[in-house]
Length: 192
Length: 183
Image (cartoon, rainbow over all chains, first blue to last red; front, side, top):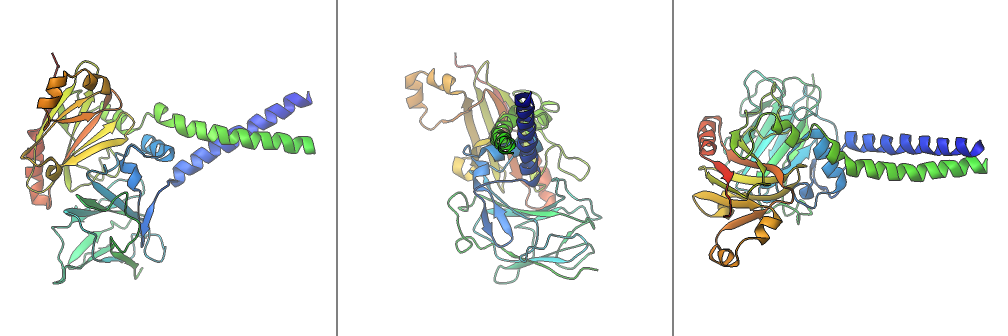
């Protein structure tokens, strides 16, 4: 009798722990092999056949089609340089220069990966659209209300993520540091 | 007390096995992965445009709204596939995904180096059946091997500004993928 209870107890612990860990890793988006440059993180292996089992499980659960490594690379930012999560009611400035690439795009999504509705139907910028200073650097202001220059509306949502994608770029699996690929800085400023 | 601790330890170890097994099996049971989502709205072995991503339309998550996108959902069981697409003025790429969404190959217009991207897609078995002389004469032929008999080819054409999106969509409208029997 004690044996039966013991086995039952062990199986219960195993099921709760094992499935709990699976649920937790997938909802938190655990991934390996990330390259972090400032507030930005990329997972170069997710666009290759060498993607790890956690990455594969994430693809299966979310329906994501990752950018292939022969196509480009995607950097995600969930907060500013100080680690504060983005708040759609605050002003956020993305500024600086970018790693070499033929084109890049910057897009704002809600945490589930949907575009965020706004009055001007602008969901992002491409490298060709933005206004730059004479040295090639730029500022993009992400704010709930209209701004002059490169304004990306937040639609006032509480949480969002930014994804910067570089197409036809040497940045990839071999990239380790920000020295070879300088990513723009992110500063979260005034909140109402 | 010691007995309970041992059962607990056994449970924890078994829990690790359960966790790893569930992670490994998840791709085979998923009903919301990219292939399943596209199965409902795209034909097989033909190029179909995807609707532009919008706040109220999320066919797939995290799509880049600067790109026109078309999909060829393929099934190589009967025959290999031939894929051709013209390239746009800005940037065009072709990415290959397995049934489970793994990006196993991608090429862009510059790497392809021509006005059109032309590829043969086949399984490793079909490739090994290619006549040998054909392999030689086709040195400049681009052959892609698919690890799974079914999967997705995603064609992307960049519209660098909103006014260029119509042109990008037009480029992909001329893309083709069709079965190409070897005999």
